Amino acid sequence: MSRANLVLSNIDKVKFSSDSIKTQYIEEMKFIRACMYFNLVSEFGDVPVVTEALSDADQATALTVRAPREKVYTQIVQDLKDVVSSNLPVVQSLANKGRVSMQAANGLLGQVYLTMATTLDPGNAATNLENAKAYLTACYNMRTFANLSDLPFPDVFDANKKGTNPEIIWQIVYVQGDPVYSSNLAANNQAKGETINSMYRSC
Image (cartoon, rainbow, N blue to C red; front, side, top):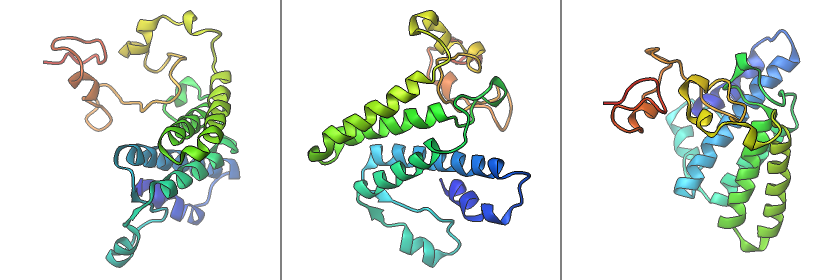
């Protein structure tokens, strides 16, 4: 999140070959910031809302105070609405798996509204549910397959197909065996000796 703020706070200082590329980076950072805040508010409720790069201790002290969760959700929705009205591709190509797409932004925004409907002011629940339905339906309509039944269920969990499975809306792409870009999360959460979720056999 802090890195997303750092990029967004300094992106106007960078020259890009086109405005569309600059916009793409801005919206990708807003998506990541919204995703991180959604995870935080879902887990902890009130959390600090910081949308700028922190440069000194006084600024950090002033900004890193817990805000009501309603304010956190307002920031999340604002960021994601910017993303869904941007120029990002509807879905990413195989070469760009792991980058943010319009489908991912709609899916996350729908999930956010669904959570708001069940955790915030009950008086707004109906509106939040309608918004959730609209964005989740938009996400589903952007799928690249006809029916879920067309996709073999085991493929969703097949490490060899993690970059090609069309059911995956957005994912963090790790590089198997790479010392910097690999992850042991999947291996550590599967049965001992298995290679179901990771090609690395857990022990």
